[in-house]
Length: 382
Image 1 (cartoon, rainbow, N blue to C red):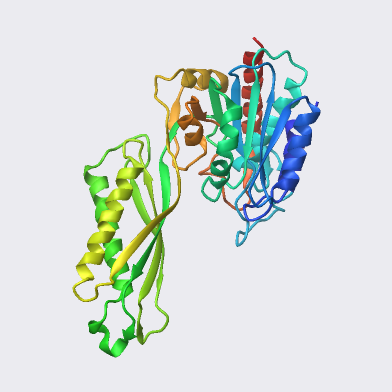
Image 2 (tube, rainbow, N blue to C red):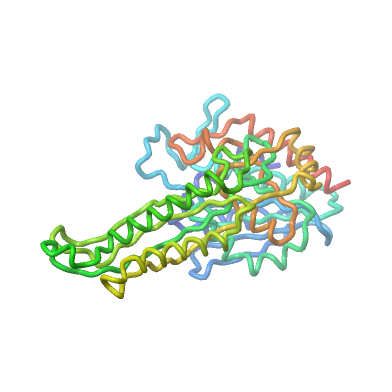
């Protein structure tokens, strides 16, 4: 049998930073699963440089789905003291990019697949491996139309993002947006005669801050989150070409992360109404003044009801009596929207280790994940 640690060593050696191809890792995982009797389907990205995998073994039926992503965040600009693409073990810690987020979980899945090859499965074990999760859950969105028909309706889905092996039942949804502000070009000596696109942009930022205040003081709240309300964030603002030219164009990128109780469509409508107010306030001076808003990416939140049977099932498998909600986004919401009971549960800590230099996973966490996988296998064989 192939140990989880040996598999993790291989996985870390593949540089699957999201800007790179994941094909080498995918070929390794595809061959590993096929050699153990799994039926494996490649779900190629349109450009052919990346691929997702869906694998299944066992008789037809509902079964259990295990989901993970294969890409990792960059190491550029981080002060690593170890080779990020070589697994290094020091005492109880396993160092390497992706050990926590989330190749440790992928290694545990493949190790389970190795054991499942020799087991008498009464229900199917289903595995979904995606790409480009770290850039906004892009890969799973491109996979979904082909993946969904193959999945059927598993009775449980486990997305193995790092939760310290606690059962997470929720996270916020997110949308990424771009606003382009249109004003008038002119000489800065006559600046008051023109509509400065950066003024439109800053007015729009003020509108977003007012929305934030409204949600923070009078909106829905979920105290399971450290920030218990829907949030707005402006990440980039740019405009202008020279100090003595009034800029006629400014661009900003921003996001909102919303509670399940706050519908994304409603928030987007509020944002577009705010953009229209800003444009209208300047049109008396320039009839072309406007703020154009485009939502270019989004992923759903997760809000598994506390009464859902998948929670008790997950707690039994993870040997945990508690539930939690996480601050970061995952692919779990996509599976939940397909009607699949879904939780997030995996080894490691996103807050403590994820995305950081000298990323590591504690061996005890990996062992706990393997133990959960053993219980899944026992359940599928009963």
